Amino acid sequence: IDSRLHLPAAEMLAYFVTFLESGGALCIALGFITRIFAAMITFEMIGICFVLAPAWVWLDKGMEYPALMGLLALHIAFKGAGRYSIDKAIGREI
Image 1 (cartoon, rainbow, N blue to C red):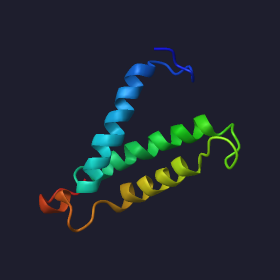
Image 2 (image 1 turned 45 degrees about the vertical axis):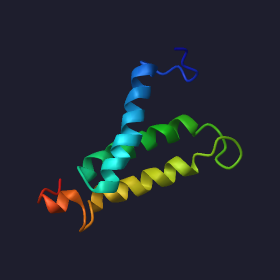
Image 3 (image 1 turned 120 degrees about the vertical axis):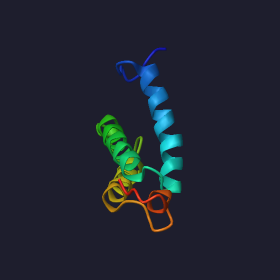
Image 4 (image 1 turned 90 degrees about the vertical axis):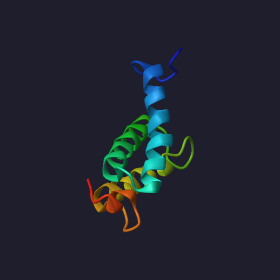
């Protein structure tokens, strides 16, 4: 696979991002291992913002959405799951 961004191990990174954004998002929605997945998504969004940073925010690619998603994930990482989460039900708020 030819990496347009010249990322190392682009194919493996793509599989990891796919897992994180689908499986991790599902776990956050259900409230299972919420803080860990939210922290991982925060770091992913920081990376995406650094990749998109050279472009003007409002003209080209728009990094405001990854920045907002990263801030929301950071909030969830600190706040944790809600009262109706799986983490709360099994008594393990990581």
